[in-house]
Image 1 (cartoon, helix red, strand yellow):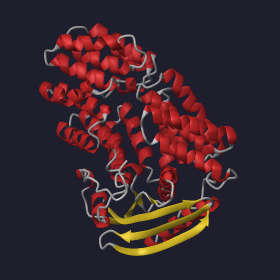
Image 2 (image 1 turned 180 degrees about the horizontal axis):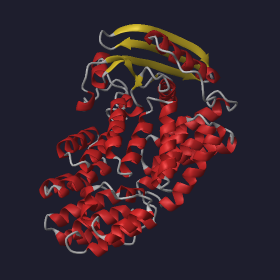
Image 3 (image 1 turned 90 degrees about the vertical axis):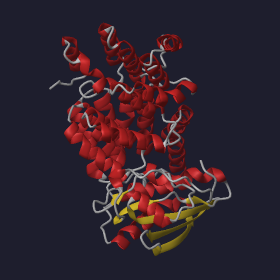
Length: 479
């Protein structure tokens, strides 16, 4: 987190969105915290995210996703420059001051091409009226841009839960957005408190579903333990609010990546973006689901839409790069992966994927260079898998084997990563062992075992009859 008014390094601008700013592309920048207590950041971020979410249902707008907007948190860059980097012709900025039960929220709508303010307003209200303030700001944006603000479909925010419930939910979301194991644990605690106190409040259940899924997706906790909890929470969220787009995405992720109910899961993901057409995470997860089903030609346009909405998202740049890698378009794949790495050089999943990409191309020295920082970092399954594979392919087999020992019996290591490591280090020597690890990853419920049909690392296995048998276990049909 950057201190207020500290200059922010310029993030890269993906080529996919390098185009003139469009007035109907809206970027809501993080509202500044002017409260006496710095810990009120969660509240300011929550207001920002709520306004983003409210705008995503307007079909005539492209609303820049949270990840990209929050890159500019506390930035002193000129708003015209920010608009250019996000291709956003309209930029929203504001501030929040919370003192006791009183709020002052100030906001303005800026034409990013000229830097001219199109609208500005300050609201002095009690905390319980925060939803009304958010609605007025969203309405002002819609009115200024002459688009129709979608009628309230979800009554979730304005239910009988009160400000205390909302604050617990925002604190949980703030913890989740740290994207660390400690942040996930804190998020689960806060969301669980919210549902214990307010069992008819849908949003915390949705937050729990996302957190449980994330813990499983990245091998922090067992998929067999986490995904059923995620499904239960998502279903409860939808029971309480059948029009909550995020909950459809949460449920769709579990149905596709764990239950392997591809048709039903894809339908849930499509429903999410029907409700909120600018919901970047929904587009991303739909694209990933289509990709895993082998529908790469359908997946790429969806992922490109996700990238347009959230151009500085590490995950979306990386996933679209992975899709091009699977399509054998290496130049575009490498460009997008490098963009992801430039946005977050410390991302283990990005480095892992780039190591796999370079090894597949026979660029072993480049693979090791990408993996080296992971070998020096605290132990993690992505870092270990990528580092050991690169070491082995560069002739440093004993070092790769030694790195296996501390993890060989660890439940923290995802079976998918075991498979990837063993496949790269033994692919020309022991295909039976590769199948053993692949079968284990499916048995463990690893969501990454779903990429059997498309990921190039499996291409030498696909002629073996055992491959079709394993694909059938995840309900996929090889072409």
